[in-house]
Length: 308
Ligand code: FO1
Ligand code: CA
Image (cartoon, rainbow, N blue to C red):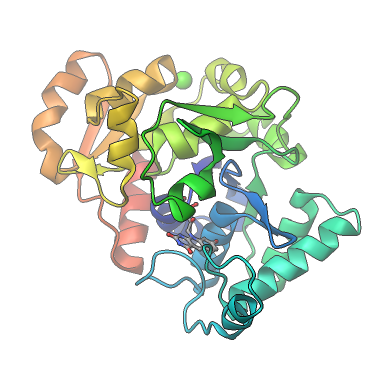
């Protein structure tokens, strides 16, 4: 049976790596959020595709949470000396990835094609697939207007008060060919939603044309791993953003958010008290450790998700 995984960046990438460690390449398609992507210094930057790629290649920097390990920053220092924008940190090795992707795309290759090639070159046998080849960009509404996600998150450090989230370009953003193929497979056995932020990392995937309807139509179980630990987001100042938008941060809110799509929710042992209420809604629930510190944790959680 084939597994379709939906992933955002950091937390999602860890479970994606766990799934890749326990499933053969032909049994897994990892579809990645591209709502965080943007153009910067003439480069196409895809933070979530890169987080998943680096995690599967064993190149990810676990300390920083993004980018490549053993990174150096010489190109960045030169850019700064030249008076160019320095609010978004591009390591030298990471820069190589952005250059390869950007020039191939300028030569006419699709994001899907370039992602398939670059991941293969890095020795990754599993399919890492962008949700769409069309730009669908997550933007945060502020008093100064709509900001691209990286502008809001990195340049502005989430300081502006958020008034909304929108996905610019979602009209006409079709699923990538490999995503559409995975959604339609006869042998699809499960859909796993990795522990990424539902509003910022999974919603963009669900906003791609036809995706929500296709997921609803499939009679295969949809299993989500909650990104919450101890009732709060494991990483990031994103709780502030969600608070400003009036979105409660709780497992119940996540379950309600996914609604009918969701069949099974995996929650952290620190939130075991949530299980009763969640089960009361008709959901099936697994309580386990969801914090992934090493390869053993990732593989164990992947196996728990698959047995659900
Ligand atoms: N996050 C930061 O907080 N500061 C950065 O300078 C930064 C640079 C960066 C470069 C490449 C990349 O792939 C990711 C990078 N990130 C950086 C992380 C990224 O902005 C976010 O963590 C994700 O978009 C959230 O999923
Ligand atoms: Ca279902």
